Image 1 (cartoon, one colour):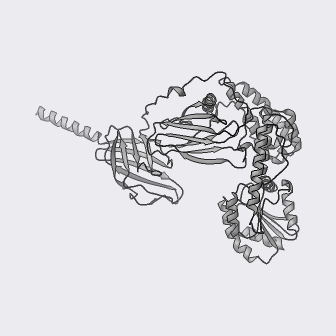
Image 2 (image 1 turned 60 degrees about the vertical axis):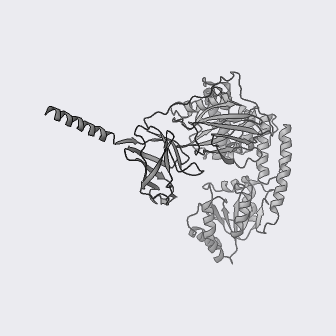
Image 3 (image 1 turned 45 degrees about the horizontal axis):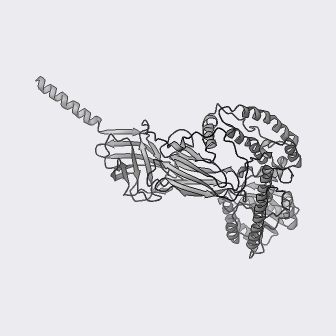
Length: 598
């Protein structure tokens, strides 16, 4: 009898053990890398008869997606085919909810070994197919990858932040990724500033090859930085290496690297300014992402839009500089490379002024104050200028301050005007390279603009207001169409609501075509010329392509407006009848026109 009971107990224990091993569950597993960060995996079940992935997609309302019936799991060099799905049909389009923008579904596969800790899921290794790599439990730490010795080098202690030099030699950034697999097809976004075309930010994309390598080459003309966005499972990480003409930088990535910082995929740098790039990353981790340990003072939190006088702005600036000097002196963990870089804090402070109170920032009084105070960030020989600092260049546009820094700022401002069709006299440029480059670009742009003007219709005015001062733009237009109701439509070719406004207004314009109304559709160089030229053919009215400064001046007249589309209606006396930001329905604009006609 005892033997029977013992045998029964052993059998029961075996059944319990089998049942306990029946399903292994990973709650909220980690996706080590995917291009498609709108997917998440809520749960993985490793059962004896199948492996199931409980997934969710969050995407714009009623967007569709589709998983191939050839989708498979790969682990330890073996493939496990998909066997079915719940809530979606393989090979068929599935849609997210119009209310929640989500869709939950389950994918079933041939069973993985229950001891599996890491696997990949792929439709295929073809470009644009869904791929998810290094899926693992959230309590499992992936093995760390050894960093090659040349990325762990001791950089020279006397490495210093370089002074400006100028050249047309291209700069090259090399990428190399550890733990890279075929099918990852990592697409890296890049943004960089071209001093010969300051009105746009150059953007492009490139992909790492099957070995996880890629090169990016461009012209930057002087030392600066380039922003690279690197996809990761929870969003884009980034790298901002310092570059210069004729120099090379190599960035080492690790597709498995996981930490809480945005630049988590970046392991190290080598080449030009590698010491700075390494220290910059450490600085960001230590100070920027630790909210309780900021080193540099914050930019003004109070609204400075209400300032009425230049003296108020000057007093604010004077009060902030001692705090900045003290904070900079307190940076003890980093070399002069980092200290010199953070001198641009004050230049970016000027950018805040330019955005929040342009009418005070652009006065001769404020410029004279800056010229007297001569901050190091503006007058040194290591000035860095990027897209966000274009307006700061205006401070030195008309000055005769010597040095490569002031020359660079004058050049950037002059090129901004040239690209907007404003051909002012050549600025003071002692730097020979910048002087030659200005002459070359001026000649190229002049020929391009003359060519673009050819064949335009009589109602299409491309950069015809080059001689009109920005602050006089509105009055010039009102005088040109004096005696008419004037409706101003500030728009851009890339603006969806702007285009909707044009479509909705077309019947109103037809209805009121016998009235003395002039419709002025105005854009600037943020709208690509070819797009604008094509689109205006279908929009009734007069069309003006003006400089950025003129476009901004029109916006500044309406303090409550700050985007596109923006509308203003004037009666025949030149009196403002209506102003409006954005477009929802046509009725307010029609009512404004009828009121202006009274």
